[in-house]
Length: 226
View 1: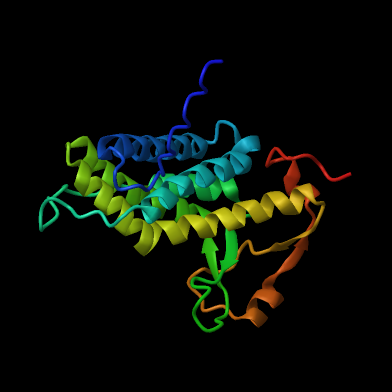
View 2: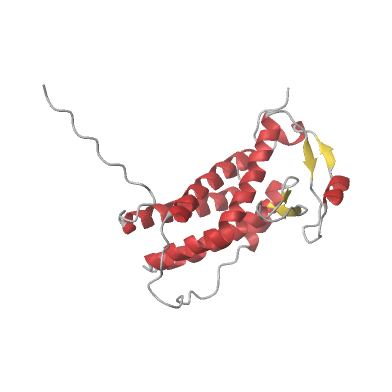
């Protein structure tokens, strides 16, 4: 009787012994894929599938973020970050997404679940995604210049300080939107709220109006309410 092969030990995605080059390639591929996908969605060529597609892409990006968050602290090779020159403009991306996602671009969010309870504030998915792309592009510029450790450090640092929470918030909004439609539940209409205002629960309640899911199901490419 032949001897069964011994099981191979599993390699954790955050293990310090993992080849850093392989880890960097995987993370950079996921990040670049997200940037390309969001840019394509913003073109508006397939508006019927925009929200489900963004839900998928943000979910996949947060897998990369989770891997960065679970990884040991990444220390850059240089004490000071090399100059990358002017940042790329994301205003067009932001504006295209805002038009594409109208009237469900605005949602309410509480920023830190561990702080004492605060009133939700109005946010925009279009702002969130543009801000996330800005952070990711910054690290990608380092990566393309061959500064792999610097890129990983930036992506990890900015995941904790900004884009992780921002992407998570937009993911909750996108998931909630899809769930409302699939479960045949009405939505609260936050369209038109001023995101610069300090909104309280009462303000949100007064400003919210009933928008039935069937009014947005078609444009979002989701099944209509029966």
